[in-house]
Structures are given as C-alpha cells and as structure tokens.
Image 1 (tube, helix red, strand yellow):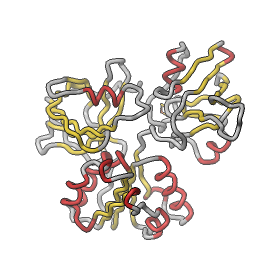
Image 2: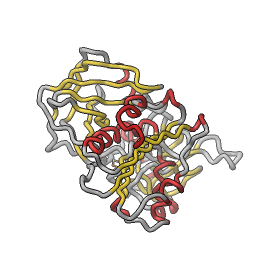
Image 3: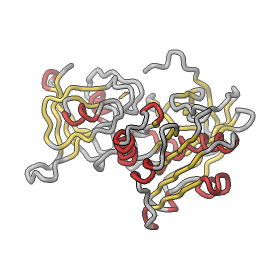
Length: 327
Ligand code: FES
C-alpha cells in the first residue's frame, strides 16, 4: 500500500445517525484540524489491517469534525459492516483528508451528478458552488426517496438548482437529455453506480465534449451483474480458490497465498491487474482503469473490484470461473 507520505491519526466517533436505507451518517472528531476540500476522502484502517476509502460529506468550520455517509453493502468485504458497527465513543485509525477528486473553481458552468450513495462525494462540492453563487445544476438520482441520504438538507440548500430523479416515482434520469443540455464549457462531476457513469461517459464521448471536463469518483463496488461466488485458478502456482460473493478476487487470492500488488482498491490505479487465460462466464469489469476496448477483450481485469458472473445463457454453468496466467 502506498501509505508512505500519508499521515494517520485517531478519529473519535461523536455521532451516528440513520441517513437513508442502509446509509449511516458518521461524525468523527479529530485532534489535528484540517481544511476539508470538496471531493476529499479519508482512508479508514479496518481491524484486519486493510483500508477503505470514504468520501467526506462535510467538515466543520474549525476543521476538527468530519461527516461521512457510509452505505452498508450487501457484498461488504468487511469495511461497511465495520463502519456500521461503530458507536459514539469508539476510536478508529483514519488518514488526514486526501484528495483525488478536486473541484476546479472558475468554470463557467457546472453539473453535479450523484447517484445513490455517490451523493457523499458530491455534497461538499454543491455547498461550495452554492457559496460561490456559481452557475450550477445539482442532479441527484436514487432508486427511492428512502434510499437517498441528505435529500431534505440538499433541497433546503440548493432550491431550484437541485433536480431530483427517483426511479420508483417514475422520474428516473434521462442521461441523453442531461448530457445534451451541456455545452463545451460546462464541467460535470459525478459519482454513482457504474451503469449511470458509463451511460454519461458514452454520451459525453458521442457528443465530442471535452473529456477533461468530465470528472468522476468511483467506489469500485457496483457492477453490471449481482456479485456472486466464482472460482479463480492460477495453474502455475497450483492455486484454485473460491471468491465469495462478499469478498474481492484480490482478497481471495491473497488468502490463498498469492503475492498480489495493489494500491487504490477502487479500480482506478490498475496495480492489481491480472492476466486472464480463460473465463467460464462473463468478466464483470468494475474498474475505470481499462478502456472500453480493453474491457471488451477481457484479457486483463482488476482483481480488487472486477468479478466473474455466471453466463446465464449456458445451462451447464453453475458458477463462473476464471483462470489466470502469471504476468
Ligand atoms: S488496486 Fe488499484 S485498481 Fe486495483
């Protein structure tokens, strides 16, 4: 892990609230004050020693409190379950706020797009644009009202700037219309499910909009298919192991004794990529590291987030399976 220059500190839980279905709002007090920039996240060290990244929804004016919104994933690899077990008074190891999704101040127009728990990465950007009286639209998409964290606060803060799209109320987002309403000077910042972000990326590309104006944060945890158990084999190492629905292929390979390289654990850096010799089923690419063309060839995959889904068209296939070559 690349933690060399990152400073760790203790964070004390001072508040835990229900924010939406499966989403907890967790407030941490920290001893060292930090300026919290929009788009910042912290890494949390789990009892296992692994780390997970969580966006900072908001910071207090004195820089000594951070608010997180944590979704309890049905495919939790231990991170969200641990975070949801926290209670006021508990202490955890966290990094200082880190930044790899900065908001560039000065664009002539902005669109902020949040899907589901992706709102946690976008909230602070909206607050800054509101404060700056910037020209912006804040688009918030959810499955249902009860699954949308911070909705009433956002409605109060952003008023007419906020467009809310709720699938089960029949007001789902039309991505084509959204992107068609964007001009060449608009910057769009998004965080949400891979299907939503992929649809925006394709439409953005089709319209020849400047790619540097499309910025996104990933959680690396939502795919095209439901997470399910599959088998991974590395014949050169005489390793065959099962990847449970609630763990990553990277975790399963490490548990089986395979020495793996990794860093971001979010499908962004490509350090954990493995070479695919054969696959029984379909590779569910959940990264943003490989290009569409590379994903289509399915010859490599990011072990930290990508999975294998059974091929439902194949009657003999009970679970998916992938065989890896050593690099
Ligand atoms: S560790 Fe960065 S893409 Fe997997």
